[in-house]
Image (cartoon, rainbow, N blue to C red; front, side):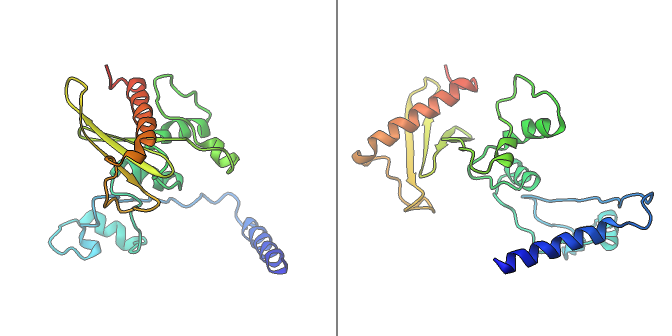
Length: 206
């Protein structure tokens, strides 16, 4: 407890020190932050000699290069959303970023937006999260809860021709498809229902 109090006191003193600006009229620093998510740092300033990038190399020479920054998830939109919000991308859809920014900026969220603002999670970390998250890759429609991820594929007549179910608690690398196990029938039906509801709401089901 004493360590925590000492740390808080030091932080308080440091904040006071830095708030005492000798020149309050001085312009704030002009910071340009450039992030590459799933594109890799294929630039000359990162050692890729076969790339000719003189302009960005000059910016890098005058600034700071982060050489140990890692992508949160191998999907461009979700990784950018994670970078902007600080939220892990596994249980939140990145479509929530737009309404969140609107909420923080005091702008009305358009009615057509599917996502929801995450400000309530900032204000109350104990706020109950979404029961499911959804994703789509080509024709595969996935739904995930805290334990399972279920994916199904349907043809043009809405007939299911393939499906997968993985238990992320016991099989986080998704090596064993357990959709054919009879004991998982209830969870599969629940995830199918959630998937269908999401597809109807997003206009991807007939």
